[in-house]
Amino acid sequence: KAGVTQTPRYLIKTRGQQVTLSCSPISGHRSVSWYQQTPGQGLQFLFEYFSETQRNKGNFPGRFSGRQFSNSRSEMNVSTLELGDSALYLCASSTGSNEKLFFGSGTQLSVL
Amino acid sequence: DQQVKQNSPSLSVQEGRISILNCDYTNSMFDYFLWYKKYPAEGPTFLISISSIKDKNEDGRFTVFLNKSAKHLSLHIVPSQPGDSAVYFCAALAFGNEKLTFGTGTRLTIIP
Image (cartoon, rainbow over all chains, first blue to last red):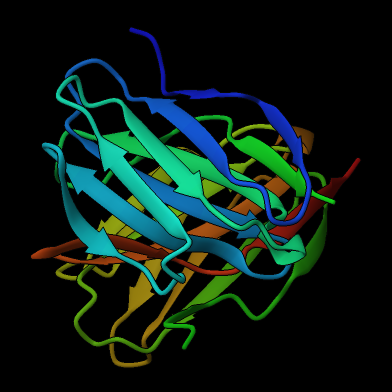
């Protein structure tokens, strides 16, 4: 069974640009969660999608958005990038009950 | 508002000895707790969990203890092995709200 796949692995952008990150969950998983990891801040919850609906949302500005498609694949978009958005963005999937999340390897975003 | 706290950013332990990682939480609605392990350039992987109806759960070399009155949990690894060197995150979940809240992580280094 393939794991959670995130693309691209690395991204370099400049301030003001926008970026789209992609996540393919484990087959059969209907929930996708997104987290931001920065040094000293741990894993900050961005949002969670379940069956194409946003089920939970963290405390991030509206520049951060996401969506989920009918095949459970999810995308995350960040508009008007800021230097502080440089981070590792992790996607995790589950069957729907999040006692056990399965994480992808992440997308390392650098904003210059 | 950091609802899950890991106050030790780093910990070094001699190989063969016991490693004890600590985690505190503030939200009394949390009723399920997990530990994840993360190697560099990889996503976190699930290690062990405990429900709030228990005070101990053991899996091989790993044991998690929960003290609900103190809102404290700990992960014991014994004996510690070099492959245990990683960042460990504790996380908490309130059933009915599928948002998994993570701590800031503790970097464990096992000294050969």
